Image 1: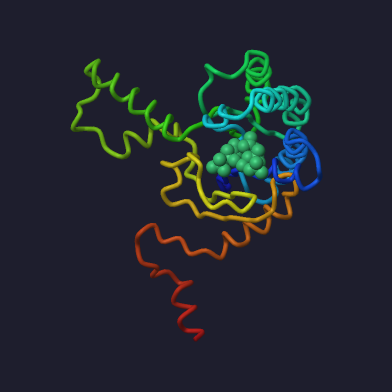
Image 2: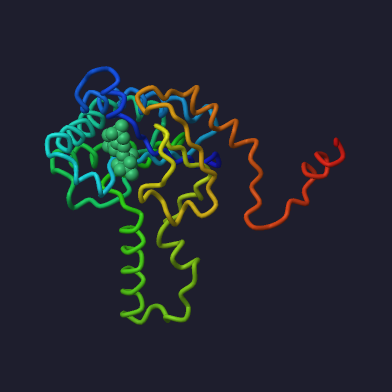
Length: 243
Ligand code: IPE
Ligand code: IPE
Ligand code: MG
């Protein structure tokens, strides 16, 4: 599997609901259709890893009713989509904290993770109770344990040490898409975003479909990624020669 790794900050469900004169949770419900469509369409667009921000650790600040509906939707998604996910070769994993996810949602999520473990077409990473700063803290804790047990010298700790701990073999993040117009990361993949391309679209998440993903990917294809170096490649030379 060597396609792209795309992260999506799925935002705008509440605004979508308001614009349709419906309560906020109807926006979340409509957003599930977008998740299904993106997951179905992603592999054919060259995406092999998809990290979707479904619930941030700061989203616990929302009203209890909205939070329970979000976890109810997660539970139903895992339950209803499992068979199709298996059939389509999608492997589901979770990133984020596990200890605060409501038990019934966690059980369905874990069943889905187990049942889809053989999926090879697409790795779908669901960021649930996720906070990048928490994840960095957790990685630092793991490293501190290694130091405390004498398995690692403090002066041997490098960015690579932290990177290995953080990414756990998942390929680097190529592109982060955020819907609904906000231009911020909201504590999503702060470490992994170091050289990711950022793409912002005003489309609200419940209106976002695979055609919109295709547009984002074609824009990505036009970006020049230098990773701090200079572009001495053929493409740059040809561009100059064509002037
Ligand atoms: C994104 O939509 C869904 C989650 C954060 C769970 P919002 O609920 O944030 O929608 P807006 O930003 O209020 O429109
Ligand atoms: C980010 O959206 C979290 C998810 C998409 C799950 P928010 O709507 O919670 O972010 P802010 O509050 O606009 O930064
Ligand atoms: Mg929002």
